[in-house]
Image (cartoon, rainbow, N blue to C red; front, side, top):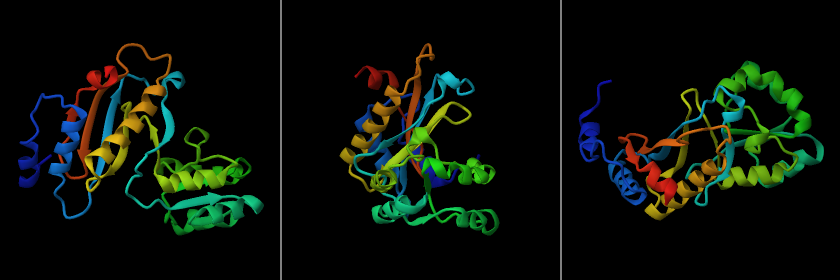
Length: 232
């Protein structure tokens, strides 16, 4: 993959083979986030899990103390009193069966997260082939299948993010924007890491967190000292 001149200049500031402390890594990522837009800062964690095994799957959610810096649009599938609760909590869209054709036939995706009450999952399930590949399917482990729709909406708006293993057993998560202060990014990073450490499956043997990399949208990756962080 051919890299541009700016990227190569930024990459030169990151010492290859060096494992950085959290503070140094965050400072370096912020310094290298020079795009004309407010870049997202992401964490990429390579785990020792085997996600093909149900007892080694990691999936959950955590509320970042300083939010993500992104406005999250929430769609709620609910009826009756729960529909009203979702609207009052600030959901962007609320509905039931009538939304199915809109998503199926009109390619409607003006939302970032879907929340559903358990009784609506039969309806939402019809959209599995559309929502699944986009990572939009509600899930109890992520707190997006719940009767407490008001709490779910408020937490998502406040900066709740979902973490899960991809096919390569890596977790990719945003922890804020480049415009955040170093302290804000550090607090968000710690909240995410604490949640992932607590979610360690008992079946995982050997090294749980093999590597941790921080990067902004357009910037090079900065590797952290995973073992020092785990033991710190």
